[in-house]
Length: 139
Ligand code: ZN
Image 1 (cartoon, rainbow, N blue to C red):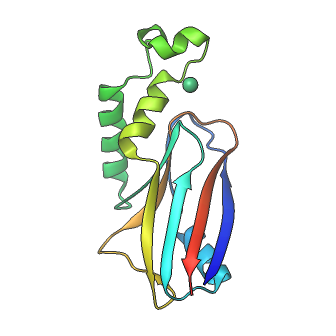
Image 2 (image 1 turned 120 degrees about the horizontal axis):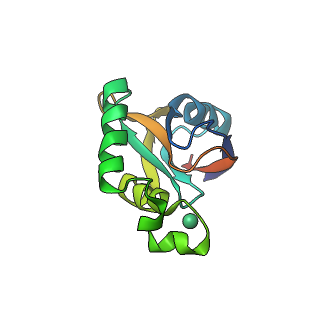
Image 3 (image 1 turned 60 degrees about the vertical axis):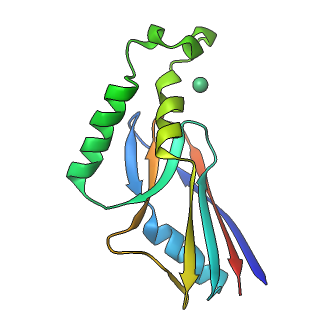
């Protein structure tokens, strides 16, 4: 069995962003040389997510609106978490609902997606360097 590990770095210029990372994960897969197996892709930070859905601008705006309704960034004082002096209480909650990781089957050297599936990095407390782990196992 082969195994492969890589960290992808991101630095979103805004507080919140959705970044399509499908192509970067595919590059990892080609680099790994693995033809059959599984790829795990996870955010390494508790204020960011990795998830799979459609690459559609309207949908991403809907996510952002929905998440802001569930856990608005402001008022910052609304969150007990922020009593520590941080301002990212909302980002922890947004990450929880959008998820930590995805696992994708690898078949014939390709990510074995359903229709329209793409992998996204969801940033909820950006403007700093943050990482995503890609771990691929198989043969
Ligand atoms: Zn925090």
